[in-house]
Length: 258
Image 1 (spheres, helix red, strand yellow):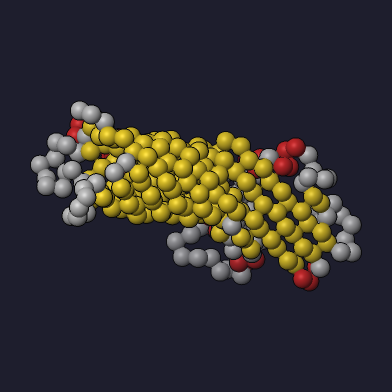
Image 2: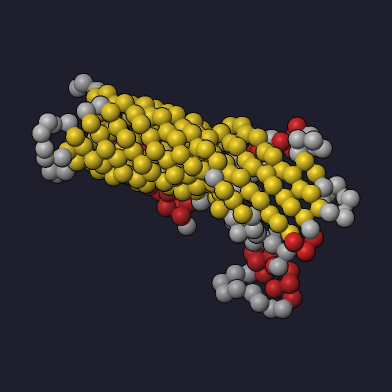
C-alpha cells in the first residue's frame, strides 16, 4: 500500500509541474551521517553514510493562494552511500557471524516542501520543512560476510567472503535487491544562499528475500493468519531489513532569474 501511495504522489507531481509550476532555483548539497539496516534476525550497527547531488525547485506561481510563494516541489539526482554492519551469535552452536554492506545508490527524490522567511532583520533567513518519496537504484557495492563455528568443519558454517569466497560473493547487489523506495522527511535552515538540512531517509523495501522456516510449521498446526492464504503465508519473507539513514547536509542555492 505504501509503495502505491508513493507512486501516486509522484505521478500527481509530474502532471502538475508543467501546468502550474516553474523553475525558481537550483542548488547542490553534500551530506553525511549514519546508515544502518533494521532486521529482526541480525544485530546491526551504523556505518558512515555519504551523499552528494544537485536539485531544482519548482514553485506554484499560478496558484491564487497567499502561500503560493512558500510551497515548492524539489527533484534532482543524488549519489548516496548506504549500508550497515551486522552480527549474529548462535550460542548453542558456538558460532559467530560478522559482516557489513557498503552500497552506492543513484537516488531521484520528489520532495514536497514549505519554505517560510523569518520576520527578522537582516532579511534572507528561512526555515523549511519537507517530505516526499525517493526512488533508488543500486550502482555498485561490496559485501563482507564471515562466520566461524567451532567443531563444525563444513564450509557452510566456516567461511569468509574475502578469503574463501569469489568475486561474486563480495559484490553486494549479487545478494541484495538493486531497487529501493524510501521516504525523506526533515527540516532545514537557509541563510541567503547557504542551506543546512537535517533529515531521515527511511526505506521500505527489504533488501533481500529469506525463507521463513516457521511458516511450514504454522501451516501444519493450522495457525494461518487472517486474510492471508496458505500460499502467501508460505512465501512470507523472514528478512525485514530496510535501508535507514540519518543525515545532515550543507548546500548552496542559486535563484533562477525570470
